[in-house]
Image (cartoon, rainbow, N blue to C red; front, side):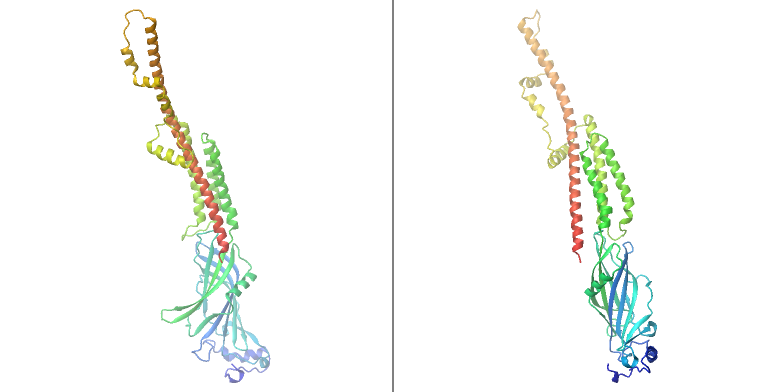
Length: 455
């Protein structure tokens, strides 16, 4: 608008600020209406924000607290003056004396507690700049499934509650890349969070009155600094579970192994109680970190129970009943070959006995029958008959000895099978330990690396 064609051209009596303020009084009387000559002309409000600090994230309440510098820029068509006549190109005016757009942040959860800036900049061509600090306590849907390697994406939506799109339009004063770069330069505090990106999208929303409202939404991407949690949570947990793994090298026959494992479980429980404040609290999702810590504790308890079972098998197997068929088939033959502990041949000694003809003959001949069939001697024994009686007596004694050995062999075979079952279970749990630790390490490193590739 040129100076000669505007009916609202301001005339200053002197080129100083008091004269300019006096000339602006008619504009102050129009602060209740939108500052346009024609009501069909929309007012364009340009937005620029700078993120000064990330003050905190509350996972339980799903709240993000930030400190931003918000700048709104629009045109007041009622204001126009000649800089040479009035002696200045701009002037500061109290905000309450001018029309200010009702652009708000939809995610606001509490009142702005930042220092209040009471003035606006007004330029000779009608441009008005409203800049103020804002402490934003906003709602944000936090996804902590990958804690502490999570990346959060929170939004700040700016729109007008009253004016429709044909009355007020919202645009950017600068690009999102410039806002991000400037925010990285001036950011004073981030705590455990790191700003990794700012993006912007514009939306046209339809209200209940079927009118269109314009909204501009800033997406603020934050990445958690995971080093603190890796050092304080993951490293001690992995160290304790590794020590528990090496405890399998201790002989299970003694009580030192079980007492050692009980000490580890007690120490790990105390560690979890101390570090409980570092874990996020939310009812939405369960973080993988909590699952990992629970699995570590469950494995340590399982290894203690397995140690108790094996110690009982190794010490009381001599008095135990024979191994059931389903345990012999599944544990000894299936799991035994899986952990490289195949079952021993059960009929080895029986085969040795069967290969002895004398033993075979004694198995089929009952000693009583041999005694009944022995010929009766009415007279003195000659030398040949004495030798035959001695041979018969020797066979009977050898048969009795073999029967006793067979009974002892059955008991020893049952004890050896129970010992074999215990050793197979012990090695199987050790293999599960190694697999769990390997998969956990690979997963942690992969998720950590992936978080740094996310922008």
